Length: 125
Image (cartoon, rainbow, N blue to C red; front, side, top):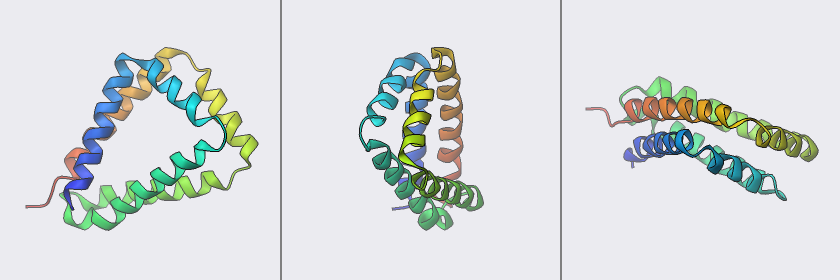
């Protein structure tokens, strides 16, 4: 099960590279999450990923990085759900109206972040 961390890191890196080349994918995904209460689904998945990082961090190469990421991910998602729904929708609409170059920068940062998770999340030898 300790492989789940580096697999998540690889998926984040792949998604970041995909957004780098196809920024409209991220723009469309944000639009999809801004409909109804789908933002809470994203927050639930993000909270689950943060909890997985907290559970499996000790079995990885650099556990303190993963513990930090897990705490920030789970905690941030839980706090996000505490915002009024109108604020959440306004935030998502704001992101959806950003220029495509900003999505590319976001994709590049996600690819680097995914690489960090991939490196730190490989099983300890």
